[in-house]
Image 1 (cartoon, one colour):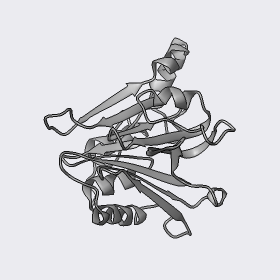
Image 2 (cartoon, rainbow, N blue to C red):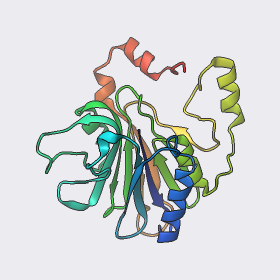
Image 3 (cartoon, rainbow, N blue to C red):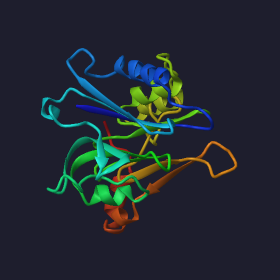
Length: 239
């Protein structure tokens, strides 16, 4: 299993060594495989306002980096949770961090979700696959945008605390229906990204601000589906 997490700081906040270490410790305390041997990798851009972190206990990952550069670009990195089949030429394979990441995911074989960071433009992206089996969760605070593949990890990093705040309405709907009726999760402020969708966290334009968040459902994906398929894909999935 692989857990991936991307962080973007807002305003003048920076991801220093202390913050990066604290985020890693908080996440490792809630990893589902924390009692087993695992390895981790982290990356931070030169501006120290975006970071990508990964943990894995998969023996098949041994010898392979968890975080990849896109081609020879040192400030463009990506990672996946799940399994994917890329182009045989490893020098050009991978996922370029940009808004049409969902189309790149749709064109790649496998069952996975993807996280990518463009350190130069300070943008963070995440995309879910066709099935949504490998989920992506996100949360925002006044200081941070956090997106990852494990809801607990997103929660603790966004709050910088192990103390959980629960979403009573989401839990109530789960008790009544047997599934979450929308994008909410058990944790207050943590949302789940729908299948075949990209989320982008961007810096503010010059002049200040906290940046923007944009969610891009894939028109390429939905245009190829029949009406009944669209209803099934956008309906809640029973757990």
